[in-house]
Image (cartoon, rainbow, N blue to C red; front, side):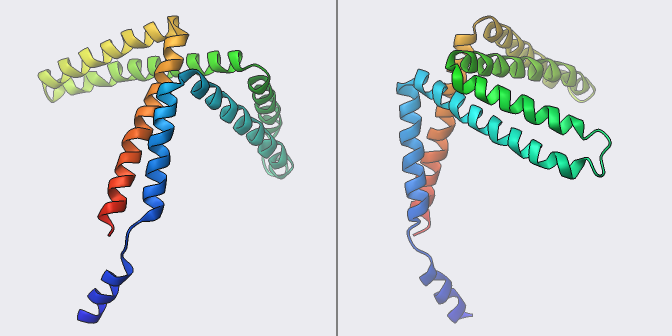
Length: 181
């Protein structure tokens, strides 16, 4: 038993991978906060490229699907649409940024409506939780409507949320690197 614990202790060391990843995430977070417009352009670029790649994946899968799936034409249409959307995003960052902003706002809106609907089940468990959940989801809905009517704020909110996530996750990775020594 003593041999095992000595061996596992000697294999542990400073986690350079976690440190490097954490530092890069923190740097990316600060760059996004400092340059949110460029961050949004990066999101549009990444989404455009991923959409084109996904389109080609659908097109490549079409021949496999048509042998056992009667509606394989859906994969063909989806592939073509994905490629068109990707090219559109790459050709016009403004359209891409606006689309991402509206998608983010609509996602927020739908999630808020679902939250309101599902908060009603809390009424059976606790009136306090029900009222709290209902108020929070109504506030969320108001913010969502505001974001829909202000796509620039929606786009910047998305960039700032990603930046905050990168900052928190990056700091966590840096701490993890030190904890592994």
